[in-house]
Image 1 (cartoon, one colour):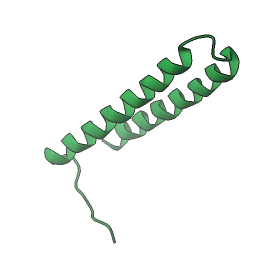
Image 2 (cartoon, helix red, strand yellow):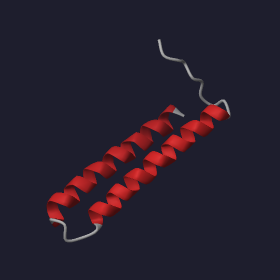
Image 3 (cartoon, rainbow, N blue to C red):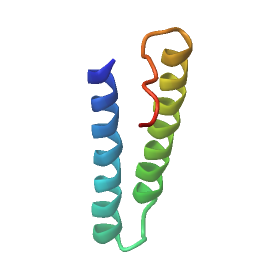
Length: 66
């Protein structure tokens, strides 16, 4: 599960970086920035839902705040 979360975080960071590159390169003439940011939001929501499901099914255990 840790590896999956790490890969998902990498995809989110990569998508944000590519959106920045598209924003600087295209100067707002294409929709590539919007698509990259939409993928980032999709990856983030998917990761959040999968973490909730993993907690519900006992694949991960909450440790609490100390």
